[in-house]
Image (cartoon, rainbow, N blue to C red; front, top):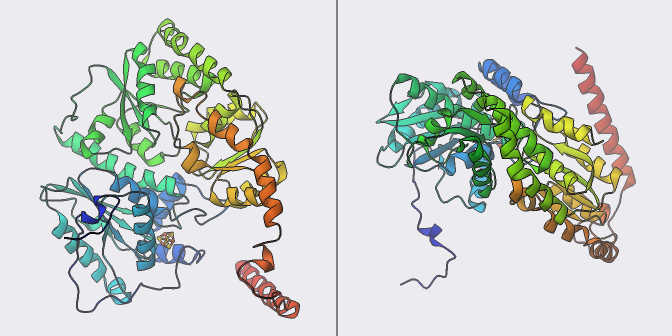
Length: 520
Ligand code: SF4
């Protein structure tokens, strides 16, 4: 008997093993290509006939100011959505290094399922054998007793090479096959990659509904009209939204991205869609194709909840007095909760979750001064009301914000607290400014309705109160690990200004050559 001590039974999870091939793949197509290879991959993809796909992505997920992901690999978003679904297998096709990183991160975040991988080398990539390998692997996996669907994802290199996932059978033995391309040069954030998969699944489910009867929801069909909720949120939020919808005679529908296939049918069967996270462009296209109206913003804070309930009332044609009744039932409690837990201080806020504007609204209603909100997500009609509300209160709202812009705002404002992504928070702490990670500490709290009001105060106030500690740490570590002193040194670093000047000259020359080439 093994006496190994383990935290859980993850080690006993079934691992899907591929068959070794004789000509074992060496590594990747071109190891020089990656997230940082600029436009090269995009040019290659266009040459491989992927222009239509890239143009659709450019419309759905407009780029700029940066043209490559500044956070984790975008494919992590769609991978996570697939891994969270019951009876859904996920298969990645991409460079080994990308797949290693993606599987590592997904297991770090608690995925309890194996990630399938179809490896390739330069030869299988260029001869089209990779596509055949993917098709074989999908056939092998398609067991209807185990899976409702298999999601196959082309990462950067197979997308750039035009590996045609659209030619995979749409169904094998009753198991649905969903092929998506999630390249870093077309999808700027991992948030938007969630939309790529959610949109592809909704598209598939919508066509199934059009073709004939589909499975009913596991818990039965609600006797009230439902509002489907777009965006991954804190588990209590859909319940709170459901409570606020009840006086209107409505119920909360499934949250998209869904947790199982049949939820997709129920989501499409709604009376309206609440785009709580506003970047789900492809998913919204499917809902609109199904004739469902979409309501932007979310029931956050006093003003947000009032406006959202009235927009829901409009979408369902509910009488104004009934909407007012629902507003009166919840707004005083929200006001009370906000007043009971005030937030005092200046806060800059940035993130890539898509809920940044909603969090800023809550903080401002709690009493905080929020001069800057940056979101890596793009501007869409579904966040317009939030942006307007914030701008009316003097907030600079920066859509598709780059890391550099977020850092510059934080350095310029010198807030009492910087809420942001890892590099922004790291920079803030280096400056002795308290920082909170958006993803771990802010997204892990309820935001909606009465439960959301005041839920941020505790963590935010505790962080602001840490200023003295941050100053002490800054003083203690002053000069350590910065610039030339970064790393472990036994003596003073050997700084060669002449080498630096020479290198700078080379860089300038390369930049001039690139500029001249651009003009041609
Ligand atoms: S798949 Fe992800 S990690 Fe790999 S090159 Fe593309 S963006 Fe980078």
